[in-house]
Amino acid sequence: MLIDQIKQRMFQAIKAGQTLEKEVLRTAVGEVTRSGDEPTDERVLGVLKKLVKANQETLGAATDEEQRKALQIEIGVLEEFLPATPGPDQLRALLAPTADAIRAAAGPGPAMGIAMKFLKSANVTAESRDVQAAIAELRKNPA
Image 1: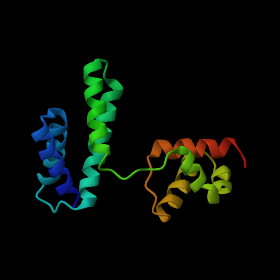
Image 2: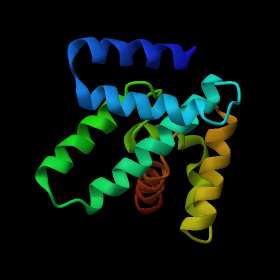
Image 3: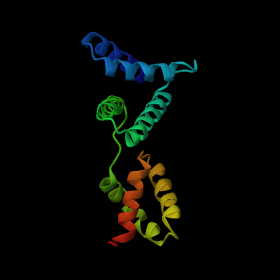
Image 4: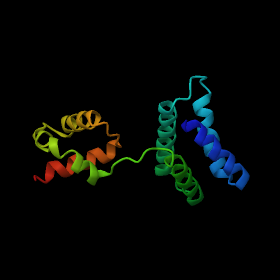
C-alpha cells in the first residue's frame, strides 16, 4: 500500500536526519490517518495531491528565498509518490481524436469539457492547467 511506502520513506528520512523530508511525510501520514478511514491508495493520492496543490499556491505567493526552496523540496518529495501525468505536448497527442470537436466548441469551457470527458474515458489523469494548454494549442493550430 502507498501509505506503507510513505511511512517507510519517513523512517528513512528520520534515520538520515532529513528533517524537512521527515516533516512533510509525517504531515502526509497524519492527513491520511486522522479521519480513521481506511488509508486506501486512492485516499492517499487525494491527500498528496491536496498537499502539493497547497504548497504550490503558497510557493506562488512566497517571496522569501529560503521558504521557496523548502516548498520546492516538499513538493518534490510528495510528487515522488504521485503517478506521472502527461504534459501539454503529450496531452495534445492524446486528444488528437477529439481535436475537431475541441476546435468546434463554443469556447474554452466547452472545449475543456470535451477534453476532460475524453481523457476520463481513456483513464488518463492530467493537471487541468496542462489540459488547458493542450486545448489552447489545438484550437489555434488546425492540423
